[in-house]
Length: 442
Image (cartoon, rainbow, N blue to C red; front, side, top):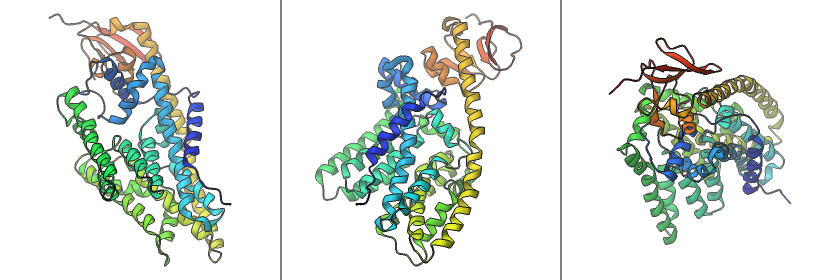
C-alpha cells in the first residue's frame, strides 16, 4: 500500500523542531518586536501604530494573548513563526509528492526532497531564509498557510480552505483577490459557506484598517509606511527577476517538463501555475506604484513553482525512456545551484550572531542605565539606529513612539554605537553607549 502524505504530521514535526530551535540564542528582528509591542498594547491599552513597521493583523492577534507570558512572549512568538518556517518546507515536500502521482513510485519522494530544499533555500538577497527563521518573520508562516489551503482545496475541504486562506489574508494583502475568487466559485452552491465567506470578507478589511484608525488616526497608515520603505517604481521588472532566481533551478526544468514536451497536465496543476504567475505579477505591479517588491513577498508563488517543478521532475524521472540523461543533467544542475546557497549560510549565521550580540548589549545598557533615566527627558529616549527601536520599546514596556530615532540628538538620553559629540557618556555595554544631553526647560 502506498504511503499517503499526512500534513498534520508534518505540522506536528515542525512544532517539535521549532521548540528545539528555541535553544538557539537568537532574538526576533524589527517587525516581530513591533507585533509584540502592539499585542501587549491590545491587552493592556494605549494602542498606537503611528511608529514602527506597517500593520499586520495576524501576528498581533497571536501576540496579544502571548503578551500575558511577559518576558517569555518573544520566545513564544518565535515558536509560532519557526513552526511556520518548518511547516512551509515540509508541506511543500508533501504537496510535491502528492502532485507527482502514485505512478512515479519512489521518485515522488525525491520530488518532495527537492521541493522542501527549494523552499528552505529560497534565494533572497534582502532577507535570506536563515535570517527569516532566526528572526521570526511571518512570510514562512504565510507560505505554510497558503500550501495548507491548497492541500485542503485538493481534498475538497472548503471550510479549511476558507479558514487558512483568511489567516493568510491577515498576513499579506496579496492574498485578498485569490481568496475572493476562490470563495465566489466555492460558495455558489453552498449557502452556509457563502455566509462564512461574507463574514470573512467583512472581517479582513476591518482587521487591516480599523487598528490604524484607532492607533494612528488614518486607515492608510500601514500602506503609507510600506510605500515609504519601497523600491523605485521602475523596479517592477526587477521583481520578475527575483522570482526567477528564487526557486532552485531544477524546479524550473521540472516545470518546463511538466507543462511541455507534449504533456497535458491536469486542471489543478494549471490553476496552481496560473495562481503563482498572477501572484508574481501582482507583487511586480505593487512595486511599480511604490511598494517594496521584496523576494520574501513572492514566497508563496515561488513555493508553488518549486512544488510544481519538483512534481515534474518525478514524472520525467519515472519515464524509462528519458531517465538516464535527465538524472545526470538534474544532478549537475542541483549541485551547481545548491552549492552557493549552502555556502552562504555561514555568512548569514555571522550576521545573525552580530545582531544578537547587539541586542544583548543594548539590553545590558538599558539595565545599567535604568528606565527612569532613559525616559526622563519629555518621556522618550533617543536612538540613532532604527533596527533596534522596537526591541527597545518592548524592553521599556513603552509604545514604539517613545523611542525616537534621531541621527544627531541634542537633548535627553541618546543610545548609539558611535560617539556623540557634546554629551556625557553615562553608561556603556559592548559597542552601545548611553549619552546624556541637557534636557531643555519648558
